[in-house]
Image 1 (cartoon, rainbow, N blue to C red):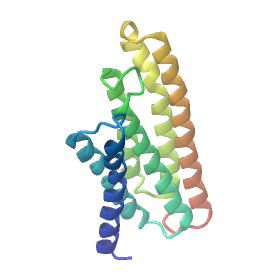
Image 2 (image 1 turned 180 degrees about the vertical axis):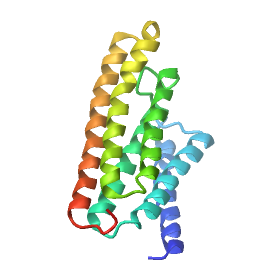
Image 3 (image 1 turned 30 degrees about the horizontal axis):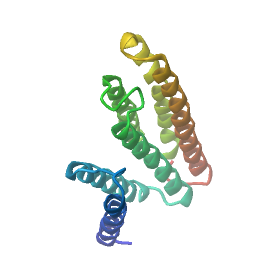
Image 4 (image 1 turned 135 degrees about the horizontal axis):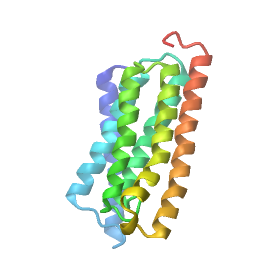
Length: 183
């Protein structure tokens, strides 16, 4: 598929997904998005889809494309939940900014690995480790500002994300095993 067709399809999917909260806002007061919320959500969805289109083309196996999709989905979920409700306390807690470091580890690692499957395995293990460190660092730095219930929730959510990152790493390991020539 050409890049132009992929971009058109991506724009349509993004627009459709943004219709969901727009329609929901017509029927309930529980969904209250501002124009800024729509812009941020649209940027995240379109940006993630674009990243998938560009990176997935680097591998020639379905296992590689699945691994790329999984890693990007986890990254999107991390950003989305952090912006929506915050993973440590509320979304306004400065400790949540540490999750930007997790994404930086992933981006820098992916570039250094040149998106090759075995390099991505190592990168995603490093991302999982960085994810696991975030609540520990937050607890050390912001201990008086973080309630014990909030930190316990953060460790629980962190475990969930660590499992997802490791799962993505295992998918890349599978991609390298099925003979992607770009190992």
